[in-house]
Length: 147
Image 1 (cartoon, one colour):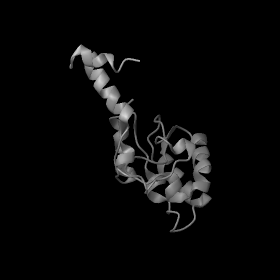
Image 2 (cartoon, one colour):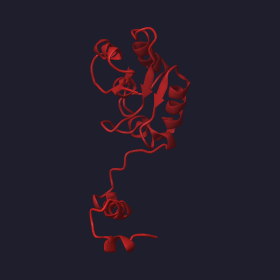
Image 3 (spheres, helix red, strand yellow):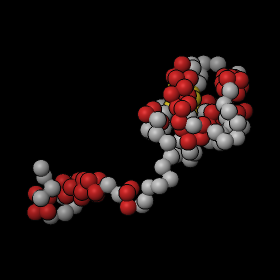
Image 4 (cartoon, rainbow, N blue to C red):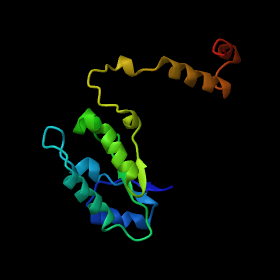
């Protein structure tokens, strides 16, 4: 499946249906007011839904993106009390619901994590182990990592 990521106008984004399965629809992310700006309304959601569906070329598949690596998580942007509602809306709309990892379980941004807490020692060990299994290191070193 070919997906295209772009932050263009809806008219320009629609042109990418010609060269891929679908261009990501980021308008839920970019066009809804943030939690501190104004409440999210049904009318605002309807506007965004129509903004995508109305100009979408016939025979193509819509998609609904709540979050991605470029933006704050939906629970941080709109309040954790609305995460389930947003997920339900995108799952009931026609097309594909695109979930950024963790948003299906209500993850929000964590601004208190340290760099040290992002290091996973088991991944480091696995990287070493895989390199060893691929013969990039002496076999003697591999035995201590085999369970």
